[in-house]
Amino acid sequence: EAAVTQSPRSKVAVTGGKVTLSCHQTNNHDYMYWYRQDTGHGLRLIHYSYVADSTEKGDIPDGYKASRPSQENFSLILELASLSQTAVYFCASRVSGTGQLYFGEGSKLTVL
Amino acid sequence: GDSVTQTEGPVTVSESESLIINCTYSATSIAYPNLFWYVRYPGEGLQLLLKVITAGQKGSSRGFEATYNKETTSFHLQKASVQESDSAVYYCALGNSNNRIFFGDGTQLVVKP
Image 1 (cartoon, helix red, strand yellow):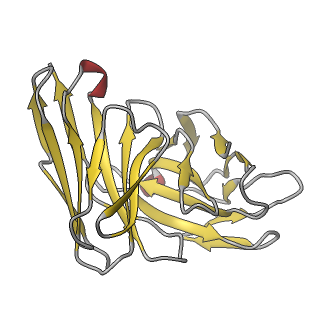
Image 2 (cartoon, each protein chain N blue to C red; image 1 turned 30 degrees about the vertical axis):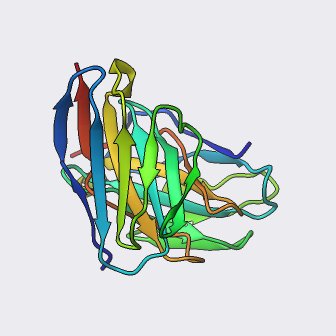
């Protein structure tokens, strides 16, 4: 069973502060994704990566950076957190070709 | 662009009744996208329920079924007789040729005992 772990699971940040959300997967998956979910809405893709040291923009990349230093780790960075970035963030991984995503438990971010 | 639209929730049904959650998709980047249903049970993470990658095929899992209909661009989720344990949020999703997966807004299903 694929294992994707996120940290922190919950965070309160101040406007203008820097936030780093981390994701670690233990199953050698090629692809990793960061999604954002707002209450009552679906998941929207922020950034993704298919290989270490390379990241791609998703549909809503503005205000976010991503880093993939190794196959196992994928971070989402908010350099200047804003109120509008309050949401739950999900990391996911998948093996190339299968299409199935394996999700982490989510990180709830509140920006005050 | 590619997108997914699904039944707006919450959907409330009584135990043993039938269920259908509608899902239609728009795929401009790929002729035959991969289609998925994901589910989040209370207190659990999002997980795959079923997937179909070939048009005309049907996927099934846990008593749920969904048929990939290329003509109507639909992938409706159905179950003949729901149980209280099926109460969850269900997400339809589409995978395109650029390795992106697009999700609908989710449909909360409430099954009354």
